[in-house]
Length: 124
Image (cartoon, rainbow, N blue to C red; front, side, top):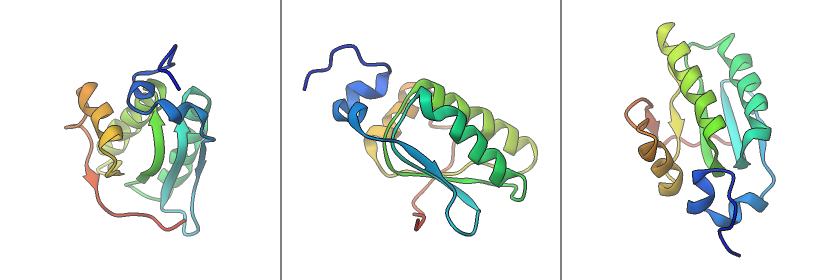
């Protein structure tokens, strides 16, 4: 599969990611948000709503990106906005992400220093 006409920088790093079905869910316990698959523009509003839901009862919201294959710029913007919002309330938005391709997206956008990357994985 070629790299023609990707919708975001992430597609260059993960060309097959555009084919994967994406989802966002809040696991039982409701203290984190899990992102699965290709998180693109179509998933940004769902991610925003899920983080909002968890943030109503938690100062910090862990976002598990371990099963994410791509994050486009709109999704990263949602994460950055929530990170700022939660930090202003003495909380935060730690990201569970060991995938070097996803981490590289944050580096390329100059946002790697804005987030706390953790190794904790969420069981969903």
